Image (cartoon, rainbow, N blue to C red):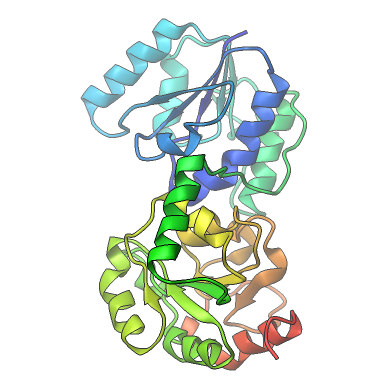
Length: 317
């Protein structure tokens, strides 16, 4: 039986789906299992035994035609669409695959959860419901980004070049996608100073969108590590840190694979749907003790609330 999993992205969604992909591999042990994903995310699965990866662009008519030709030529017996958006739905409809599993109770899926998903609970729970209708056991909440030896060596080399040895490290992501500036909390500079005063060494992580912000923050305290690491290397760097504090962003999900506490700061977005897996107890919201979610500016989140949570968790004296 030849199986295809479709999961294109975005990055946080890919990471939350890793435990599902692992569960599907275990369920079909010995059978050919393929993952169709975006080229940007193919390296995340380069060392997954038993998983073949096909990375094809998502946008444009030429890319769609190329993907469809490949898909129909493979003659898959079952397709599990963990993306289930309009693009992947069209591919499913034209795929020629007889058994199509997806999120929506409508064509082209002949196996799907009975109700519509409108974000009423965490996306991980919904993905497990998709596995259930396929006859596959639920996946663990722990996402998986194992680090190959070369990744571990590159991170160790960076730490050595920075002269970092026994200092307790804390990873901070103060940025957010430039399309979502409302997700940026403005208390990180004060927080980093407080952490440094208690013996922690802040490391500012992020990508191109965060470079200028991290440069300014690191002028006061900490190390600017903007654009220094790949996705797998960020997860590996997290394994060398005591904890991390991030906005609602892709690094929040990446670091949830590191086995450390990841404190996610939420205000305008609904933490119940998108908090990092395994990190529910580390969510910090702008609206303290609200009985239900209400979009709230992160400007309402005081630094003291974050420090208080760290003290409660015995990470600060």
